[in-house]
Length: 389
Image (cartoon, rainbow, N blue to C red; front, side, top):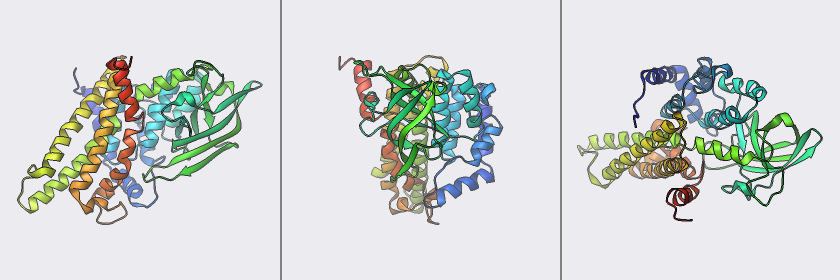
């Protein structure tokens, strides 16, 4: 497998880097990182990328994309993270919701919803998880009842990232009771700024807000159904599987580890000790190998997608390894750096705008997002190894 970039992909990376290296983008990133309680939403940098058709590089040009490949999308994700640009809104809007619309949306849905996202002017979210249906989405209880030529949606969704910023969201609801638990689920396009949609914060230790969303009988039309009624499970499985490459997790692990290595090198230079010596150095060196492996696994998934070849087991391996490695890197970075790693971004003496402190809070979530590590291991054991047959 050839993991090297083509000349066109290198040119795209260079163009993205040039934009992200500008004083304006650095100032915006610093503002988000150093203000207590601030979080990255629709940023000016998104609009700057959108103006150049760089924000949704793998989308068709007719919808505001760049007409490129999934590799450019992965490159953008890596560069956003490497430059410290908050990426959650981008991941939700472009990688998940946008992908779902491209695969299953009608022409009218695509023309209405995709261009504003590609321009960096609109954000989208996902309403899947519920109090009793997290990893087991087939157990969801949100209902969609027929109402003339439309539907009434009632239910509660939790742990929905950035829902307070979303203009619309993809919502999974049960439309038909069935003995086959995966049948009878439909995905709806729900406008978030509408009466009957209540969004409350779920405060957490991370920088990015999660939300508790209640749907009180809101009405949507048949035009708001994504795909086919009762066949939403196919959409959920397909989109989450394609999004599960581990690219963003390994990119975060790379950035965190590089910061820890730089700090260790500086400390070693002060006492004329080789950074690779001692237990701490050996731990970081071993993690460097793990991060490199995570990158290779992630890009293998990207290559598979580019070749229109999906492998759920390889995706599960990549996601599991990248998530677990990211968590271990954040813990090791904090422990080897010492008390300086506890300084938050609003402290003038914080390392890289509080990068390691924020990483320590964010990292445990990497083993949950896009499918928990336990679910990934089950998929690997059953589908990949045939151990649970």
